[in-house]
Length: 303
Ligand code: UTP
Image (tube, rainbow, N blue to C red):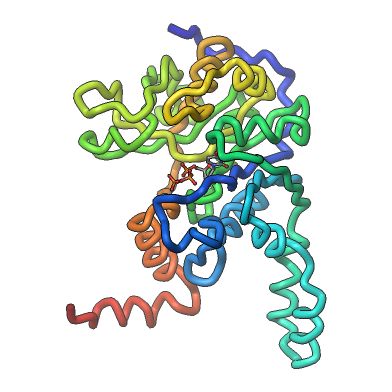
């Protein structure tokens, strides 16, 4: 069992985030045959823009997107679009031109390529040189956590206060633990985080409900010290012959300590068809312009 997590790094600001977006998105075929799932639109923005905006709202200064084959539209989306901007300006659509410009100007974005989809852990490892020797956040490019209290910022606060890495977890129904990475954690309340903070004893990938140590599932947001790269390098391919981030996190938890943090918010796995539909409906209901008429439409729906 790991002892109380101890900081081994002088606590440094979390400036960078890695967004793995190189997976094949097979759960969303045929939509993902020729376009990245991270570019599928939820209401009016591609999924990955929500994730980038969460980074910006969390104070991240440099985003590293891990892309792969067929993912060029992600780069295009965050690039300048001079022809489009000029066209909109000439038509007097200044607000739209400014909105388009803001997408490319909101933060520094770098890209690196995972040549083969060898797993989430491998995708994070591919970003090693761009991250360097500093703590960083990881956000899955297809997990959306809307709301005013960004999950990544919550994890950064835990890291800054303790100097120890933290991963976001949330409660899932006990009978669904086999769909998630599940945390074996021990309550370790401390101000100002209270009972949301748990010390990770172990992580179990997709346990059946009778074997699950808890119903706290890993959510797709992480703040990690640079030592995770060394853990990833020592991680052998696991399930599906992929290098699993969870396996490297187990090493990190054992050697350096790691927090699970029951974050405040709701996540949507928008890489899954049902999760995508839920995200679409709920984010549309929160939309300033569309929320009220959409709610009215849903109320009157006769099916
Ligand atoms: P997922 O398991 O959701 O992605 O990984 P996937 O493999 O594309 O999905 P399915 O199961 O085939 O539908 C979570 C995140 O990690 C990225 C994905 O792009 C996604 O954002 N990922 C996954 C990589 O970058 N590389 C990989 O080798 C695997």
